[in-house]
Length: 119
Length: 246
Image 1 (cartoon, rainbow over the protein chains, first blue to last red):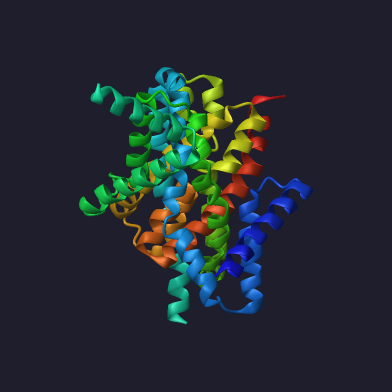
Image 2 (image 1 turned 90 degrees about the vertical axis):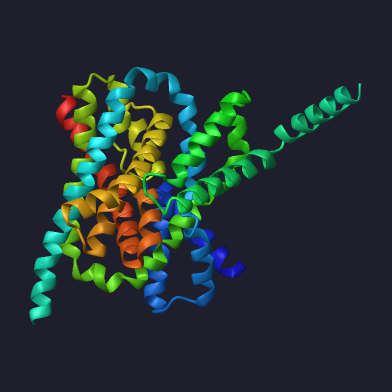
């Protein structure tokens, strides 16, 4: 278990270093994800203990956003001014983006999926 | 007399605990689990998002006790830190579902670009129409992108990174709460498409929600989150410099 937790940290560390070095506009952890993905693709399977560690991290993923979200308390003053504009923009844009992306993706994959099922 | 001693005692303990990161770390875990408990009791009603409940509870407690966000974060940073390793471990559901991802590569590319541009443009346009200040408009642009990247984009364009972080979390909560209802309402049934829409719109919080429901949705959501971070980081600064500077 500890070795796979270390592996995950190591992937992130290399990802962070790589991103800083190449000045890519990608966060280090996303680069670390790509790295771990590449490793799994070479190995062609997921070790049981790695699966356990990742499940522990991902099963409580939304908890990890709580500290940053609590940062809203710093901006209560600014949000009092632009509150309406910001709320409307967030709600409308979020609802519309989910709908547009979901419908487009479904339409594009349904066509291809249908062809493959027919074949 | 007796009463006074007890009160001084409690005050001493409080002063001692406030200085240690353990208090706010524990508070974060308790608030989240209380949120989770309410969410589950309400039949996992997406509108009662556990992150939302936890944030409202924590902000109320901090404001009432006069605690600064900096003091709170000294404890909460240990939870915040795990975001990195959790992002790395999204490689596992992605690996498991990769055969599906490869089949839909073109659909993914088109949906991603459309979703990415739409997410930024619609939010900025609405904020502008309703009279928000320039700094707020810039800060809301990368709202659908995972927090660390969004903050970087915001900073490079002259926005407020810490405001962007809050708008990103708010978008995540909204997306997780409303996304599934919207997708069902417009008839998106396919798990891959539902997950991809959640990840493009609501980054990690949307992915957390997608993972709870279905592994395919979770994998596509995690993929969309990573790709959208990349796409927005390249496209938004480019579009901003094309349209608003000469």
